[in-house]
Image 1 (cartoon, rainbow, N blue to C red):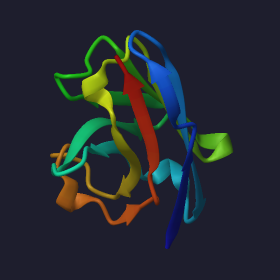
Image 2: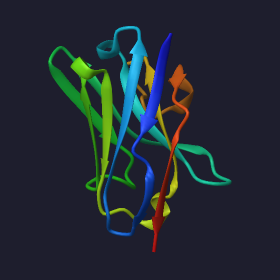
Image 3: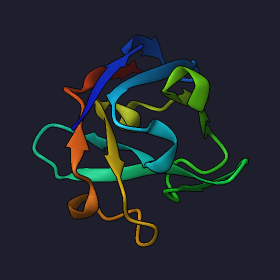
Length: 126
């Protein structure tokens, strides 16, 4: 089992920044790909970003809608994954979820993730 706890959400004006954190406990953190997803009211939960490790090298992928604005990182020693969100837009408003998976491909697919956090609200005002 892996337990995930997100933090760092809040209310920010358009153009502002937030950094989300997700702390994992349980099994070996470094072996998991860690993703961020978001869900706006009345919409499906969508992929935002993912990071995975091969030895000491980290790889990342992003949804087109956040490329160039969001950055995902991880600290395996702290069992923590981060999502730095810059140049925020009102359309970024959503509940943001951290998730973990053992899969190594198609990491933008929500269904492949086994473990989820409870989510943290991000609200961007115009």
